[in-house]
Length: 255
Image 1 (tube, one colour):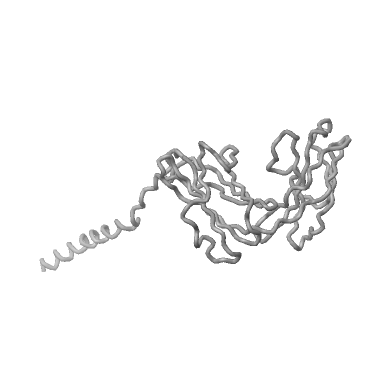
Image 2 (cartoon, helix red, strand yellow):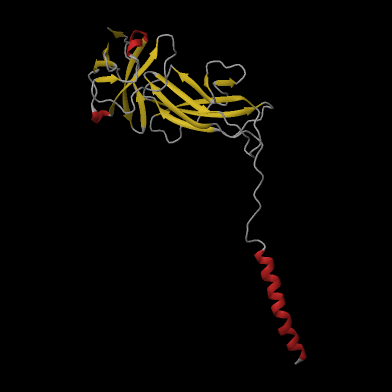
């Protein structure tokens, strides 16, 4: 009888010990520490303008573990693929087609922390896969950023822009190219303004796409009309991509 009593008293303690050991594993395996290699480029995107394709991204500031990144540059890989391919990255070359050194930029435009590469010899109807790999000053490669895009036949730009100075601002009108059909993906027009000694702007002056072929630029200074240079582009949606035509012929304000 005493033996039975001992067994009954010992069993709860044994159960609690087993339960405690089992509970120790509830949290799962310990996560490995984050890498000290560079974080991936941010905001990798493409933009087609006429027969040019722009690839742009933002420079990362930290390593993957959050420490300060000492970045040397990037390796950019490109792979052409057939439209409809299920594997855009298959057959990707092992050698980058472009190496970007932040100390000696070539074939790359920089604005703040934003880098832009422009392609000018792509085949309409083909797809292109891009991989951007950051490289630090020790030669350590970081996490890649990737994107794939189709390169479309460029749409035609608007024609015959005319610019006139008015009291309320500067008035523009133009002629359509002739193939602006909403069912085919036409969204409207963009207008770009710059002074003659300035580089081309990256953003249009209109906040929304223009459907009409006339526009009054009330933000312009009428007295500076002769120094302004205007260009227009048609804007289209092809699948899930936005693209613009090449620039129209430039126009300056007449009195």
